[in-house]
Each structure stands twice: as structure tokens, then as C-alpha cells.
Length: 73
Image (cartoon, rainbow, N blue to C red; front, side, top):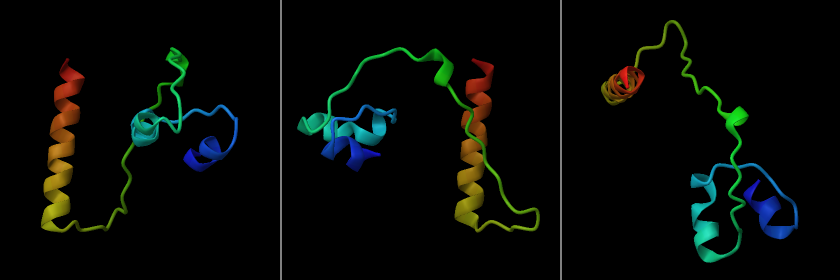
């Protein structure tokens, strides 16, 4: 998507974070539109028999803690 936007005059929907460098360099410009219907859930899936490494388990624990904290807000 970034390349298509960079080399053409197309309009696209992409996260501002994904193109932050291009916006900063002036290669792309931001259309500051409010699109409330575009909010989407992001999920996590894993195999039932998957055993995470210690680093993966710690990451998942931290991720779940952040999600729990934001769910209470």
C-alpha cells in the first residue's frame, strides 16, 4: 500500500503509524478524515498445542495485562 501511494495519485486507507516516515519526508500527505466506522478488533490466535518460549510467554502476559488495564478504563 505504501508503495502504491508513493508512486501514484491514488488515495488509500493505511495506519498513520505505518506511513509516519513517508509523511515526515513529505512523500505522502495525510488526509485528516474521521472514519469512526473503521475501528476494528485485532485478535491473537495460536495453536492449541503450542508451547511458547519464555520470551513469548512473557510477551503474552504483558500483552494481556495491557488489554485488561485498557478494558477497565
